[in-house]
Image (cartoon, rainbow, N blue to C red):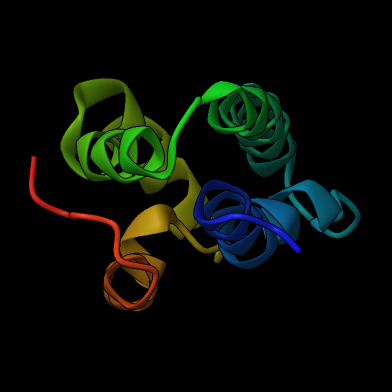
Length: 107
């Protein structure tokens, strides 16, 4: 049975990251294709970073940082322009899940 860390990482991956990785370039302009490539590369990096966190609390703390960090804001803007989800879109659900799992969501 997955622990709280795994459940949180799986949730973020399934709800925010997988749709970005599965997005297709067909039918998009060249500029959109470049944005999508950049967003997909950043997303692959994020997945690896999330998988490397050692505890559920570490996942929650870094999720919260990712909501407002400068590098994340740039990627979020690209994702929004492409009609793709960001971690901001799943914030409430993520925080509810963390609370249900007994993970302190405060920084």
